[in-house]
Length: 267
Image 1 (spheres, rainbow, N blue to C red):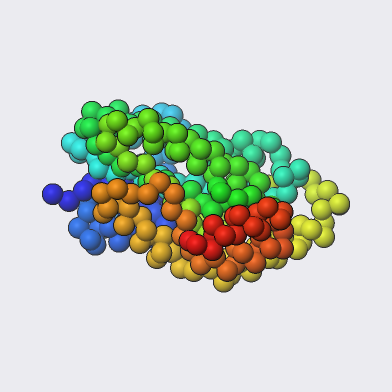
Image 2 (cartoon, helix red, strand yellow):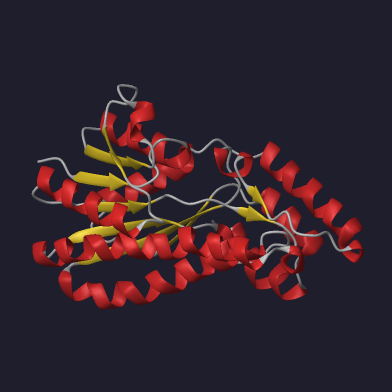
């Protein structure tokens, strides 16, 4: 029997490519979108309504999901977005919204699925994090912080869930050509003149990295491998490291240029 896989944020980017790929491989794929009606009939897999920022939406989604399926094999937490901006210039309400989606939204969806996994005595959680969940590049402070929080949460959760035969992994992509960068939310805070030259330099280098990024197939491939393996690794950095190393060499502290660059180079 083919596995049933739930993918949040499956109407674009990594999520859409992953959903299509797994569907072609014969998996029973269920995706989510805030507005599934916009994509009705466009995808070969089922798409259900879910807003991970809305508690009522999560509750109604979970009820609908398990009225349609008996078991769920894999949850892929993919939904999220990116806030860009110098830390000191970023309004706190913007920073809070970043955490509401990337961290709390992910936690809430996971918590909604966990009772069903525990009842089954099996399951797998794969969360799309980011390489910035392991390092802290400039101009991405709150995005990076939200992904660090995701890493810490699932690092602890995996130990708690091992007794129930529930496997936990995170995938940490480097730069890839998806709509994440194009749909990034600028902090739109008041610019501080002291950062003007630095900000300009960072934005230009970040854009160059995005322009030269890979297409997302390696991320899809590593998630597929995690689904198919019996003992999936917890941490899974993926992507060509050259662009990120160039970025870090220009902006990161010496400590990052040492230990972290060695880690990235091995991915």
